[in-house]
Image 1 (cartoon, rainbow, N blue to C red):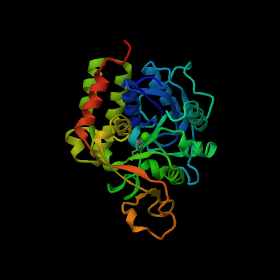
Image 2: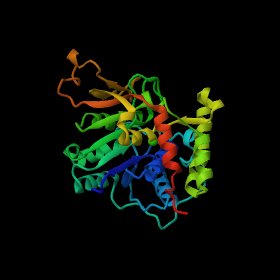
Image 3: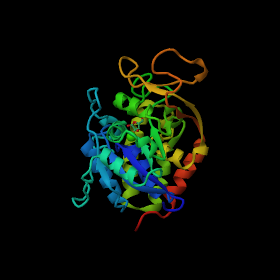
Image 4: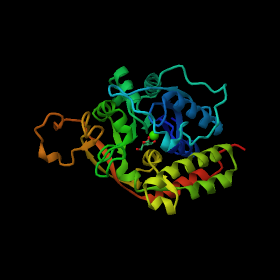
Length: 330
Ligand code: RIB
Ligand code: CA
């Protein structure tokens, strides 16, 4: 392992906040990006793949991109939210990847298994879309959890209201069956959910400073996409009208990976509601001493961590410092 760098596979549905997270990860010197795996969610999966290829091209990074699941395990797919991320997922950017940038021939699940098993115990997974690819990888390699170093998920919520229903967060709601499989697989998993992502607002102003400093197609594209995203947030949240911006969501998964000390966590069994009005709700057992009799909450069920508090200013400072340093070739 290269000294000090964290080898990572990024599972994503880009998506504007996914793009911000990706650029941050590519810019950060302590992250070794082993590959990007794509999944449906903010856009259909071929578009997610095209966006990952485009963004890595703009950043001049030849990172492998493997396409993954195009639909959930069991529930009917929902149309992508073009009103949030734009029809192309990047705020109607109107840029296309060069024909020379092609996806890996393996599926996302195969890519994850191959990459983890090539470096057992070293690789971390950062997953910021529906968890279908990870669940598929568990089907291919059931002992994968013992070979992964850590897994950080942006998704779910413990106490904060949901963003697609009163109780459900979008990534989990998009494939609740896959999410429940992943939460109960028994690996060192941390959930970075709305409890913390709604506490960190990235402003358009910050990304304007970044774009002005670099004068580069990658940061220009990010700013364009982020303005579109912030316009959506301004229609929903009054405080984002006066100071345009958006919740940090996917970015915080990388923040946790690099700086778990910025977060307060709780441990417990996390399960996902598969059906009905609560579909996609992440339910965390916060009272293990209760020994609940209901099946599914047995004392030997694998536990996960959930982030419950965050040092917002520390995250924003790290974001700006990381994006401002000279990480893009002229
Ligand atoms: O709920 C926030 C999550 O859903 C993020 O991953 C974002 O990209 C959206 O799809
Ligand atoms: Ca996402």
